[in-house]
Amino acid sequence: MSRIGIYFLLVFVMLMWGLNVVAIKILIEYFPPILMQSTRIFLGGLLLVLFFWWRKNLQKMTRKGWFITVLAGVLGVTGHHLFLAIGLLETTASNAGIILALSPLTTSILGILFLHDQLTKMRLLGICIGFGGVLFVVLTGSGQLGGISLGDFLIFMAMLTQAFSFILIKQNSQSVNPKLMTAIMLTAGSIVLFLFSFFIDTKGISSMAVTEIRVWVIFLLSGVVATGIGQLLYNIAIQNIGPGQTTIFNNLMPFFTLIGSVLFLKETILIEQIIGFLFIVAGVVLGTGYVDNYFVSKKREKVST
Image 1 (cartoon, one colour):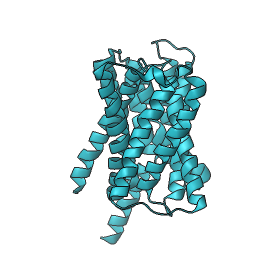
Image 2 (tube, helix red, strand yellow; image 1 turned 45 degrees about the vertical axis):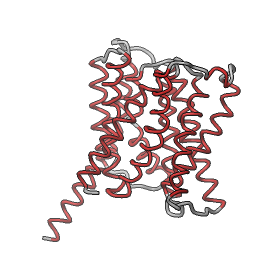
Image 3 (cartoon, one colour; image 1 turned 90 degrees about the vertical axis):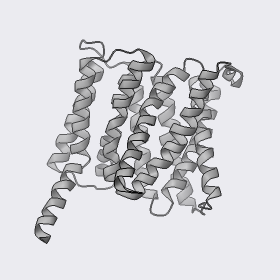
Image 4 (spheres, helix red, strand yellow; image 1 turned 180 degrees about the vertical axis):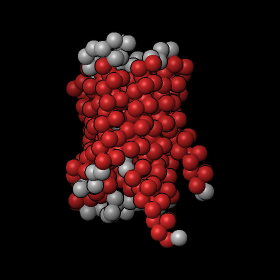
């Protein structure tokens, strides 16, 4: 696939993921949040496992590989979607989309702390700008300066657990196929999440008996298309253009969430959210090292010529 084709593919993935936040906000009005999340993600994970089995891409893993993969699943799937589902009960989809946009920046910080990635002045500036943008959004959620809501805090925890899982994925990707790792993470993480639902969603599986076809269509699109196919396409993009360029497209996700929250949830977008979103985008571009890498590549081109 051409580079332009990969770019269009990533825009499509970000559209799916951005609208998926809106879809989850709708689904938690009909289903128990944790049970719904576990079932939805299990469908996506099962789809990927069957796909790799069909393509004969399954491989044996060491005990260490299994341990890191399952741990990444507990953090990036169980923890992330547990906090996300409960958090969306207490905050807007638009706020959630903006806070989740911090994921690449937080992953970059964790890479500096645990993987000894280099901290440059440009990256430090980006980190400050990005987190400043989120603080601006959550502290002015009603148009006035106030406290951080429980929902916003839980969404932040959802983003943080996912960022930790990305570090584990990066460590494990040398010995395990990242695509297969993602499939196992989704499947294992959703099973653990299902166990949590017994303690949190006390109504049980019978509460999933919703008769509206529209709701089930959203459920299947969220689980199979956004989670399963979306993650597969995202990994294909990483394989073709690398994680650095791929991560930049994550900035589009909150944009599509904002648009979707207006169209489907009738939420009102505040000027504070737009300003905060722009700060986060600037912070991610600077803080993930994209600008540093760009200038380094330009210097190399000048030297070679």
